[in-house]
Structures are given as C-alpha cells and as structure tokens.
Length: 391
Image (cartoon, rainbow, N blue to C red; front, top):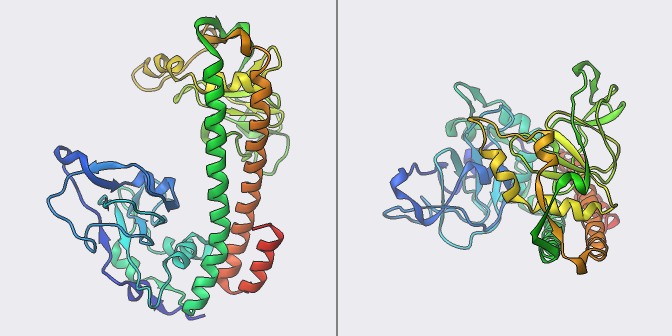
C-alpha cells in the first residue's frame, strides 16, 4: 500500500472553508450545514437545516455534493478537531459554514467513502492528530491537511473496502429508521390513551428515588461493581451505555426503571437494563402498578411538564424530589387502563432487539475498520464476516 501521497494530491478542487453569513441573512434561502450536523451525523443525510440567503452561488465553490468530505476546523476538544464526516445525500442546494473545511476528491484516483472510513480509523485519527493545533480552541489548517500523507491503494481496492464497511453502516441506518418508526408508533399509542383533562401527581403512580453520587475513589472503567450514571452523558435512544462502574453504590435503580434527568436538560429519559447506581443528575422512576413502558412513554412525551423547570434559575434548570413527586401528569382514559402496556411491550421488545443488533454491527465494523485499512485483513475475508453477521 502506497502511503506517500499527500491528501491535497487527491483533490478535484481546492480545499474550501464555508461561508460566514451575517445574522440578517439567516432564516430563509438555501440550507447551511453547521458543526452540529457534522458532529451528529458521520454520514450527513438530507435533513432540514438552518437556512441562509446568499446573492449567488455555484456548485463547485459554495454548494455541497454527495461524497464531499467535511472536516471540523475547530473544536472545544482535541478529539473533535479534524473530525471527518461525509455527505451522504443532498436533496436541494446546500452550503456549509466557515468552521468546516470541504474536501472534494478526484473520483479518478480516490473514492471518497474509503477516505471517510480511513479518517474514522485509529490510523487515520492518529494522522489527523499530528496536525491539530491548540490555540484558543483545538483546530486544523487546510494547508496542513493538504500535506498530510495518506494511503493510496488501487481504486478497486478502495471501492471494495468502502463497500464492506458501507454495508454495515447501511444495515445500521435501516435499523435506525425502523427504531424511529417503532418509537413514533409507541408515542402515538400513548397520546391516544392519555386523558389530559384528568391529571394525577406522579407520586401516586410511581416510586421516586433521587440519585446520590458515590465517592470518586470508587469509580473504575473495568466493569468492577455496579454500573454508574451521573447524568445523561451516556444516554442512548432507549438505554444508557456502560462506561463507569462503582464499588460503593449509594442510590440504586432496578432493571426496567425509568432514568430521568433532574438537571438541565430536565426530563430526558432512558430505561435501566440492570441494577444501576444513579448520581445526582438522575432520578429513578418506578411504576407502582407494574406498567414500566406506560410510565416511560408518559414521561418521555411530557415536554410541557418539564419546561417550567428548565426556565427556572439563571443558568441551569433542575427539579427536586418534592417538585417531582407533585408533578401533575395525565392519567389514562378508562378504556386503555388495561391495554396500553400490552400494546407497548412488543414495540419496546422490538426496539431493544434492533438496538442490540446495531451494537453488534457497530462492533463488527469497528473491528474490521483498522484491519482493512492496515491491509492486515483481506476484503474477501471481511465479506465472510459480513455473511456470518447476516449482512
């Protein structure tokens, strides 16, 4: 594998920073991709974005195209500087903001999805880190990115590697869409069942445990003791991911309890999958009538209930146990009292199953990525791994 090519030699057009648009030109016009989308979507889809008005634009200088690579010029963290995403879909004219560098590769020699995966690999990330500068914020310069030495295997190999890794990402994306549909269905069923004219105190339908953080000396990342969540940092679509454990748990939640954020942003929820130690940023909400999914969706879809607590104070919103216990939430209409939980259960089981499959697919992709990029694993062998994973 040739590793002596400069990244700038692979470009079809010069690296370009995005536009700086005055506030008076924002709100309507064409889409503008910002840093939030770059960090949120490794493969940027055709989603609604902020809009800006610009007097003129052309496809090469100011508009994004499918398979453009996007690099974060600046980040508050060293890990974020130089973060690379790829444009997956464009449905209408879209530009990008000034804190982002766009790289458009020459398709005759470089397959952009391959380089997206390269910069996501440990090898590629280490390469980016060699050009990160720490000034007011961590950042990279386009002149340094162009000089960066990158691998240049043959074009067929680039396509083959990207196809293998892309198949896994495509399956993950399809599963994610399925989860979103299932989540919308569960929310719709819950809204139909609620009686908004008849509200009850949360303490009458649930047991509430406020979190309390154990000593920091008890923390570890080795899986020793009880998994610990301080707040929403580790929250996922449904379940938090395990990162920290404690050998001296204080306040506990049980599997099936709703984990509720009691500090800004107040009201975010996940479901506990095991016995869990909760810190000061969380509360455990347990259904008193064995309807955990009904309770979860009741709290998940109660944005109006949390709004006053986000507004209180000058900096951070919060809610205490007394306020949480007296929180008025909608009851269920009589005809749904015995049926909503039964309707929600299979939906939640499907979501849990698909999330588990996505975890396995992500782990497979992350294991294959450095092996393929380093040449230690052949594409044909990687394809066998995909077949075994049902992809």
